[in-house]
Image: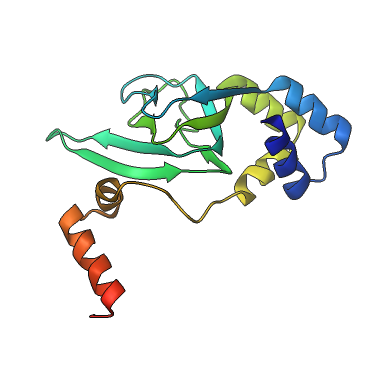
Length: 163
């Protein structure tokens, strides 16, 4: 799977082969099964993730007990799991794998050091955005702030051009 990371580094940076190899030696790539919870709401994050394959959902449980989806992360996206200014603050969100995933896993302190050493990595991460999300309809509706039934009606109207 590191070959996927090399592809991204070649496409989005001007790092030479030696620099790419140095980065590859410092990173950990892990596979996670669908349903794996990466971080629970209220836990203090110690790691960060970058999606090589799969989809990760970000959500919270509000005061009424309702799940509220706030983001999805797919290939070529960094999973934003921490408050940039207060890394020791408990997470307001839960992050769960919606599919089997292959993720780059990094220590938050080591990530900062690596970004300082290889400044092109930060711009690479910003450039890598995936437009298509593969998510269940009820979670997409939650993300949009509407009911699944409303989303279904909207999709039906769009598909039949009845709007």
